[in-house]
Length: 639
Image 1 (cartoon, rainbow, N blue to C red):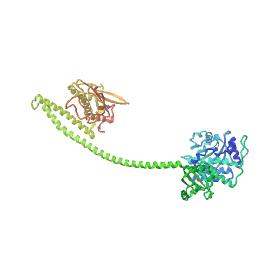
Image 2 (spheres, helix red, strand yellow):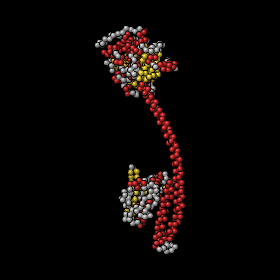
Image 3 (tube, rainbow, N blue to C red):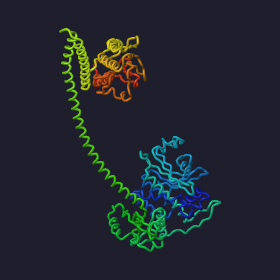
Image 4 (cartoon, helix red, strand yellow):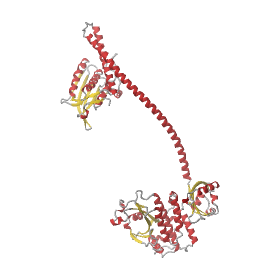
């Protein structure tokens, strides 16, 4: 395809906008330049050098067609992609013409139907870059036929639109072998820069002469063909055009400023005419010159003298800036070099802030390290204290078990002798002697109960008290306990009532321990219920949340429970006052309910209390129902 044919296709693509495209002034009408500053300075140094070399080559080739082919070929080399082509679009005909392809500099344009290229249609409709990482899985490509999918099944596709005055007239089509990462940010940015160069090149190529305009197009001026010297100038201006948002100075071999772009004038605060009369050392402080030279000499061989540094600059108007500078010798032009300026004031401030924050974080880190060391020391001390407390607790439990066991034997002997004397077997007693012996027997019984509770609790704490579970009718146990406690309640003039279901209830439990719980709860009810009161022992089967259980209740009409009492009555060593004044007003040491709680929980049930002050109290506990086979045999109460 010759140059004239490319121009004709371009005229057809742009239509009545063609003359405005060819003569657009300023060139920003092609698209905003500001977005490219971050792109340029985000590139790797080697990529930046390659792009500058492309700029150099772009204007040394006479033919625009060869220049464009060189561009797409360089894209494939830099990005290592499998395909790159330029396609000019015809909206009305819904077709496109492949004007340039990287494979062949003499490529003859091929017309394509846009309906076969959904990715190009998407960019045509949206004006945005379209990326298809996996054509087989992208819904955008599902309209393609099987034979059409076969040509792109193993590639990823990127389409970059060419826009003029908000409309797409062409695209850059790039394909690469499919990979997990797809197209990288680097590849997208380099392609964006190349598209920018294509737009500039297409505008400049009209200087070589253009075909007749379509009807209705506006006239334009045609410049004379360039000579070799003007091509070099065009090359340098192309570089300035590409780096428009970045300040650019052109230096000769003696570092005299030969050219400056508008951004350099703005950043330095010096007029263009004034800049062209200055030496580079007039811009950069003297103290930086030697350092810059050392940096250029120390640059790696592959980077051809490229170096980046930063220096403070104050404009004639007094504005202070921190400028980031990058210098590069033009390839093939040993007497020229380019200097790129960028305003790094905010970046420097950010770095200083980050440095300050890093210092603060380091100080905080040191404080945290000291605090951590202190916590570790305290933790070690706590561990040592816990070990001592644990050992003390074990010693206490062992002492309690031994002491209560040793106390119980002589206490049983004393109580036996008192009963023997009370029965008057050794001889007749007077009434005063009988009263004294009766109180002695009662005190011995209370003391023996306390000793037994303390012994049981010490066994539970040490893990030596185990359940002897068996399957039996729990109602029989309740009736037996009722008969035993009925004798005591009658003596205290308290009515003990029984309310049980008729049918037997089989549960796996330890009868002795459940009896211990029942006796404890009924005894407490008798202690706290005045004469004439009522105590009711009842039981029922219940279901809740899909589980069945057997509930036992002991209700009384005694003094009731306060809110604070309900929170702590099941804790050990929490004795409560009985209804009786005098020395026996406080009975026990507060272990009965704590032991009852551990026994019930060891059976898999729970125990709780209800009631208000002056309105009586109700103690309830549950046992699992129905039967659970795994509950048979021994079970440790301390678990």
